[in-house]
Each structure stands twice: as C-alpha cells, then as structure tokens.
Length: 165
Image 1 (cartoon, rainbow, N blue to C red):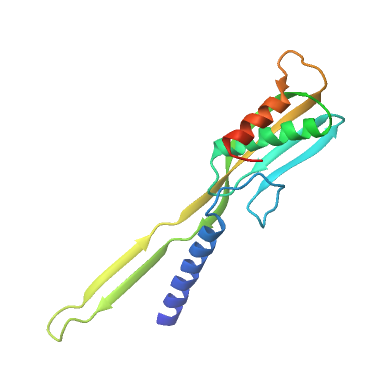
Image 2 (tube, rainbow, N blue to C red; image 1 turned 45 degrees about the vertical axis):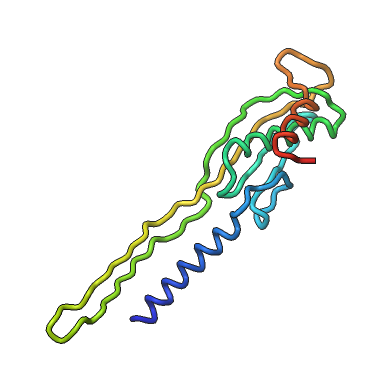
C-alpha cells in the first residue's frame, strides 16, 4: 500500500513538473505545432478569404493570442500582395487544455507507547489548465474600402509591441 502511495505521489509530481516545464514561456508567433505549444494556422476557404486561428499555451494570455491572430491575418494579406484587409468574427476564448489531479497525503508518526501518534494530512486540489484560442475571418483586398484595415500598419504595430522581427 505504501508503494502505491509513493508511486501516485511521484506520478502526480512528474506530471506537474512536465506540464509546467512545457509552458514556462508564452507561445511565440510561429506556425501551429502541438509539440511546440501552439501557434497560428490559416485556411483559404475562397479566393482571398481566410479563416485564421492562433492557439496559445497555458502561459499565453488572451490579448497575445488575439494580437497574433490579427498579425497572421495581416501577414497572409501582405504575402498575397494585398494592402488592406477586412476583419470579421474576431473572437477569443479559453479552452481547457489539461488537468492535473489533486493529491492527498497522510503521514502517521508514532510518538511513544502511552501517547497517540501524530497525524498530518496534506491535500492539494485538482487544477484545470486552460489556453487561449483566437480566430477570425479575413478578406484580403487591394484598395481601401469602408471598414478595411491597413495590413502593413497592423503588422508593424503588433511586431513592435512584442519585439518581433
């Protein structure tokens, strides 16, 4: 029984260390990879019309995920020679991305023949891990239209904010 408790504690500790080691830094601006903690992706659903997503890790805040989804949308339009973009459906949500189970440890220390043992109980609650996910629809256009955004300006502003090259 003691071996099972020790094994359970080591497993929980290893999981906590492993999960925290993977998420020490916020997700950088990079193509999506589950192994590298997230990133951006896009799908062209019609000519010049894209669904753009950015998925962060547990250390990434929602604002950064939104900014990086917008940056990717601007980059997609600029790579296609389009100066302006029309943005729709911008949304960011928190998605459950992991779970660390709680632990419970009881220690009994004998104190003597005529005294009751000292009992210590330690518990930690389970922890839900969440990550931000931001998405939008972007239409890349050649000329400025009502409601369109300057893609180059947006890209420069976001890159400056996060010190990206």
